[in-house]
Length: 71
Image (tube, rainbow, N blue to C red; front, side):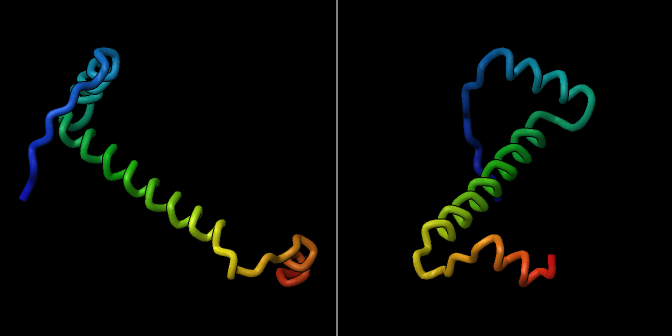
């Protein structure tokens, strides 16, 4: 199943999209891939921020990390 979404984009971006469409696949393909990529990056960012702000996660010094890694 799919859902139709209507958006407005700047003319310059639309022109780039049309040019890429001629070389590769259609506009819908590029828009879907861009949204998928953005949402994946956003999810990764949220995981990183959650881990950064986790006060129960121990902090390891660079010296100890190097020692643990045998560097």
